[in-house]
Image (cartoon, rainbow, N blue to C red; front, side):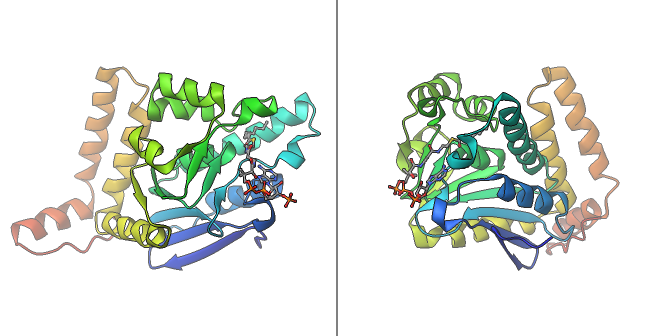
Length: 258
Ligand code: CO8
């Protein structure tokens, strides 16, 4: 599929996906959601870390496209919300880590997209918020689900009920992002983090992601069994043999992802 709103750049096993709709500050319309869905559904298996960012210096994603939503009826609203929620869930459950490099506004659906990623870092001009109630809707791309899980119920309720945006330093303080950078340093920092991840065993990283995601809602005993299962699976991989052999021989493992 040819993309009109996505720019894809590969550097070795790291892929950077840039959402590009400059006229609307990268707001997500149905076409962009369709392109995102196609991209994540067909992601090249050689990619080991995905970085998602927004085009320009001002905005990551300024939300879902309000001009498209303005005329939706209830049935269409359901379909639009489901479309976004489904693609964000695909991103969340990709077998590789996804880093959101938030380079400006991350409002509404933009904040929700960042929250579907495994790790969020941002530039010091970033702004996060869920302004939906000011438009007569609620966060509809799973913001009510993920925000409370990331920042806790009390802060999530405050952000969603007030609709007020917060700056990068506050996002850092409440744990919505892991680190804040000068704008020019953001993508290099994302790349450096991606490279550190790529130096590790791909299957182990993937199992770790699956464990953290899947175990979150399980009772402790079930979660511990789940981890034990995937831990034991590691011992059937070549990477476990290579990693431990390299350590014992004081060398560096070349992981094959097998
Ligand atoms: N949708 C459509 N167009 C947008 C959006 C958007 N979310 N955000 C910005 N734009 C457009 C503006 O209309 C403007 O277009 P034009 O030049 O034609 O007037 C252009 O982008 C530039 O924007 P501004 O001139 O407003 O730029 P400012 O720097 O003055 O302000 C802001 C930047 C603060 C980001 C401002 O544009 C703004 O408040 N945007 C809307 C933010 C927002 O409310 N986002 C949440 C939308 S709701 C949502 O995301 C719900 C997700 C779940 C959906 C579930 C569906 C059922």
